[in-house]
Amino acid sequence: MRNTPFWWIFLGFVLLLDWYVFQAVRILTVSLPDRNRTIIHSIYWSVSILSVAFLLFLPLFFSKPGPHYARSTIFAIIAGLFFSKIIASLFFLTDDLRRVVQWVGVKFFTRTTSIVAGGDLMSRSVFLSWAGLLAGSGLFGALTYGMNNKYRYQLRSQRLYFPNLPAVFNGLKIIHLSDIHAGSFSDKEAVQRGIRLIMEQKPDLILFTGDLVNNLASEMDDYWELFSQLNAPLGVFSITGNHDYADYVQWDSVEAKKSNFQQLMQVHKKMGWRLLMNEHVVLQRDQDQIAIIGIENWSAKSRFPKYGDLSKAFKGAEQIPFSILMSHDPSHWRAQVLSNYPTIALTLSGHTHGMQFGVELPGVRWSPVQYVYAEWAGLYEQLNQKLYVNRGFGFIGYPGRVGILPEITAIELFSKD
Image (cartoon, rainbow, N blue to C red; front, side, top):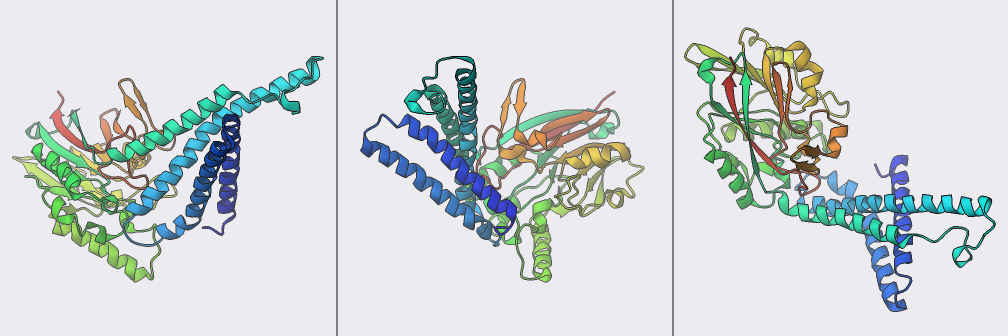
């Protein structure tokens, strides 16, 4: 990766961004004593140079199997600094455009040509310089604070009504979990609190929609006993997500990668979870049935693999009037489910994490991930079919949450007359 033209272009952009932001820092410190100004400038460039140095080595670090918590924290700090500088630069760019317009006006439309300090452009706005630095610092502060939110599990309750749900399943309570990402955990007691919250709901059924680990089955070594506490009268069912296939690390051999996946499948079994690999199970009460369909990862996005086979998983469930599909990637719903499988009443997904960053307030819901995924968090409906996208139990990459908290979903099903 580091030898690709894109990588060097990106690195050049980072250095240019550092220089651009420094111009505002220089303007705002011009009136300080020489010693103080030197200290501030030295700190700025020391942090910038360290960030670039870490960028050079992080791709190598992340290509190695193993726990990612320390690496993710370093990456989060660097990414936070980068995006904070981007935000600040938007203010500086506005200021520079203002200066260009003023310069054109003075140069060509007035007889007055007095320019500040003998330069060619009007002086920078101190107000916009401060505004840019404060906005960038605010974003960095939010990302830093968000690291305290990674275990703040939020219980979200949904009552869903369907015309084709057999009446005997009225009130069926499902706990929906997704995206555990055990390799990112560092606090077993915090995870235990989340598991305790799940079991306090007394669910009839627990459904997990993929990404148990970041890459390695061994990430569950310290956590499988905790998650084996999850149980429900109708069972615990699970599927795989894109990270479960360990496609994002370098392996010594194909056999080693396959062995890792086999070990991961055994972890599900050891926890007492029924892993559905392009198959379905039938739940029965009295004479009525519903189907739980589980497929391997399938995405409509080209950068994610298609291991799933819904036609195979659905075979034999055609005559069952009500089905629940577990499919990790929510893009699957619009790509296949809505058009080809009308008896799949409810699809449960995860994958997006709500990007672990956004705003969710009454009447306002936004995250950058919505520009990639039309369905990215919460409930979506089309005619009699529904999709619920869980925001994720765990985290990956950025070790925190800003605005989009980790989620445990309690869903109750009811028949609609």
